[in-house]
Amino acid sequence: MDRRRTTHDPRRLPVGRVAPWILATAVLGCGGDDDAAATSIGTGWVGSSSGAPPSTSGPDDTSGSDAAGTTGVGTTGADTSSTADASTEDSTGVPPPVDACAEQAPTCPAQTDAVEHGGLVEIDRCGFPLDDQSTDADADAIIQALAQTLPVVGFDVLVGDLNRDVSVVDSVPGSPAGLAYGFVWDDSENDKAYWIPQGITGSADADDTGLVAGRRMIAVSWYYDIDLHAGSTGEKGVRISWVDVTDPAAPSYRMALLVEPSGTPDAPDFAPVVIHAGGIAWVGDRLWVADTGHGFRVFDLSRIMQVATDEDVVGCTGAVCRGGLYKYIVPQIGRAEHDSRCGPRFSFVALDRGADGLALVSGEYCSDTACDGPLAGRLFRWPLADGGDRLRSDRVWPTAAWLMGQRQVQGAALFDGVAYLSSSAPAGGAGELYRAVPGASGRSDWSDTPEDLMVDANAGWLWSLSEVEGARYVYASELDALPAP
Image (cartoon, rainbow, N blue to C red):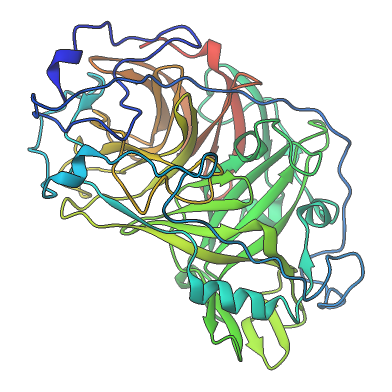
């Protein structure tokens, strides 16, 4: 970056102040470009509120009576398609400013040594272009065709049809610092080897009120490992658990399957989404899912659909569509694809409600056997349009990029000028949480096998989860109880 800006103290600032080490505008120059006009607009974070009526429950996902067409769902065949203007910002209709990186040939930043536990190291952001394909016209047409025959379900219907319970706990293996709340999955999911939990998001991300359909929600992604399922009837891909924690003493949930449109508008179909889904971010009526070697998949929560549950298969046979015994499916509407020779990996993702607008924070899991070395993991901040349903423009560059200086990072979030990083190092040991700024980091105990992160700023909580079979917990810690960098 322009080193003329490094005269400021890069440590944690009070809420509402500017964190000068974060680049949060698309008009910044690249690292080393001393002639560029460097403008530093800091990033603050906005919280959300909670509180709503308790949840209800519905029939089990594997019930053969839950076929499509059941009463209580949205209007079938309604035109619920969504579109986005690829050339303007949602709020003003004015084209976003041209990023200085657009005028340079994409090149990879020189590898900068990162000192382990030494804090973030800023790197040139211009080598990491990301292209917006968040509304794919072909996928949209197929989704609309499916919506002519399948019931389109509002989110209020899904959360009114929860059918499983989780157990609230007062401790989590690894003893996360500042533990405020936690639950463990029911035995059928806690001990199931072939579905592995990964990403976390919730209504604190989805809406600045902190509520969706009047509920306070947590969402968790799971990927399917067909090799671990001896009785598999076929690939399942990724599912999402929608957990209602409005009444924290009695949380309940339901699963829904992510699907990718296939076929044609005349013969619409869908297939499983076979990715790792290491992180998720719920923004408005979109769910952004990390796709490790590519970027993000984007799913349309305004067109959740109800399908038949009589056979354990995924896809449509004639007019009957199924989602692997899951009652609801969420269709993929588009994606964001990197166009970088620097090989960025999208291992996890979190939402940042910055002062300059919404952004996705992604990063890379690196170890002795992954990436270019255990300390090669990078962290990126990608700007979104105001509504969060697309990137800020057709092509964006991260507003900032850093080396993290930590091994085996499984999740990251930005809040109040600090990067929160969950690490599973050492392998087989208890996890660790780091709070990092340039030149410094602080450490605290975290759960065993930790994964993705989400900040609920209004509650003052940092959410995470653990993946290991038999000890799958979802939990939140008090941000104020975590160590300073």
